[in-house]
Image (cartoon, rainbow, N blue to C red):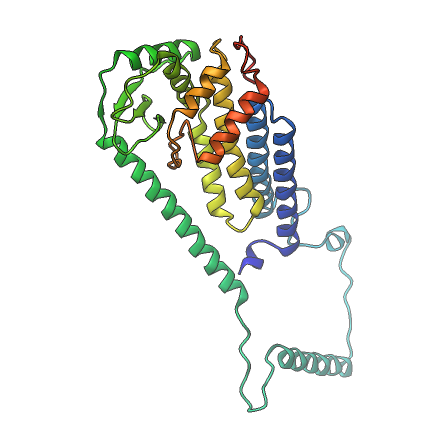
Length: 333
C-alpha cells in the first residue's frame, strides 16, 4: 500500500534530504547561539525546507511532470519508424506457453509456501501494521495537542480583567518599544503562576497571577516586553508548525530535537528583546529569578519554563550581556 503511493527509492531519497536539512538547521542554530533570533530563523527555514522539498517531489511524481512520463521506459520512447511484423512458428508458440506456465507455477509456489500440514502460510502484513501504528500515534499526538490547547483556552476564558496602573504603564512602554499595534488586554487567573501571553486572538492577552499585580516597575518592564516579543515574532505560529510536524512524523528524532530547540531559541530571542531597550541585563536576570518556574502550556509562550531551562537562560544572559553593565541598544537579528 505504502509502496504503491511512494516508491521505496523515492521515499528513502526524501527521508535523506529532509534529515540533512534538519541536521544543517540544528548545526547552524548552535553556531549562531549568541544571536538567538538568527538561529531561530535559520532552524525554522531548514524545517520548512525539509517539509516543502518532499512535498514538491511528491507533487511532481503524482502529476507526472517533467520531460519523460514515469509510466514508460525511455528505450521504448526512443524507438521510431514503422513497426516490423514478426512471424512466429506454431511450435515456438507452444514452447513459449509451456515456459510461461512453468514460471507461473514456480512464482506461485514461492509466494504461497505450504507448511508441513498442508495449509498455506499467510504472510505478515507489515505495511498495514506500520500504517496503523503511525495512524494511532498521529491521532494520539493531535488529541494531546488539542487537549492542551483547550486547557489553555479555558484558562483564558476563566480569567478576569485586571485594573493595575503599574501593569498598564509597563504594557504601554513595551508596546511603544516594540511597535505593537493592537491594544493588550491584562487579565489574571489563579491557574497562571508566571506571566504569559495568549496570541490566538485579534488582541494579545497578558495573563498574570492574581497576586502578581504589584512589584518593581523595572521588573515588570522587562517581563512584559519579553511576552509581547512573542506576539511580535509570531512564535505561536512557529511553535504550532513544529508541533504538527512532530505529530505527522513522530518517529524522526531530529524533528523532536528541532521542536525543542525552536522553543528554546524563541525564549532566548525574547530575552534579547527584553534588554534591547536599555534595561540593565542584571535587573532582567533578577526579575527571572523572582518568578516561579512553570511548565509551558501548548501555544501559550511563557516567560519562564522549567527550573533547569530558566537557569540556562540566566546563564546565557550573563554570557551574552555583561550583567555588571547596563545594556545599550542591541541588534535583534
